Length: 282
Image (tube, rainbow, N blue to C red; front, side, top):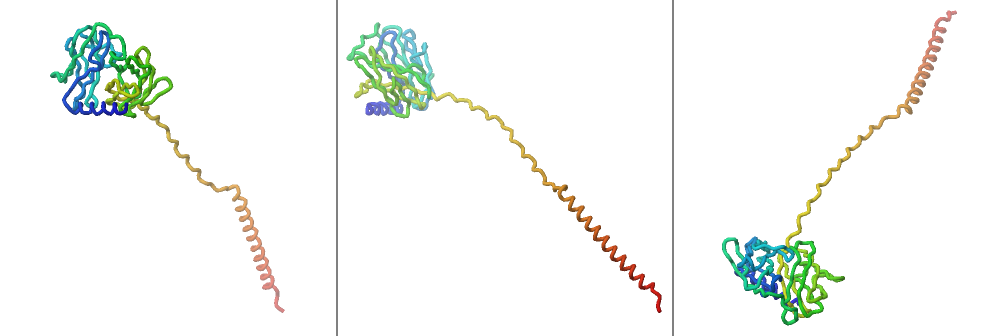
């Protein structure tokens, strides 16, 4: 299966580097059935237009779940684009691609009046994608393969996404087939061109190149402004006047006492001196 996927990727890369080309898988369907249209060699283009050579032959779809239209404009990624055609009448019809000015390539599709009976030898395996692929969003992938009890789903690269079937999941899974149909969920993990392949476990039975759109941008919530608390003023240290005042009073009292003591001593000395001076001489 890995070798088959590598070969598919190499073929797609070679086609995208050459002139525009359009292919259908399968090229023969019944009324009401859908075929996958793959345009390659679209390097340098942003989009490509799909159109019906006979408008009454059916409708074109961006995904198998759409209601469809007669013309379709599809974005180009990696030089490739994918669309679907659902037939509404029998006959042989052409689908073409154009750049808006002139046709670039076409493919012929044969439509029968009734769906062929599913037999292992006659039914061509088909891959149908349930909705436009977006990174991170899950959609269904349906495989129509007759004569098998199980079907292997795989990707061209492990980083392309993950399948889920029952309790198993990963870049490749095995899913049970009932009445020729097997269904899995697929969640792409990168945008651009992705190849989905079907295998019986040994041989690649079918492959489809699909385009994955980027995930829609998620608006980022604006951060809420948080008020920054202002620094509280640091209180200025104040002296404890209550504890200093007694010492001041004590100092004043000592000075007063000392002053009085000195005054008394001096007064007595002066008095004594005056008494000596007043004593009469013999």
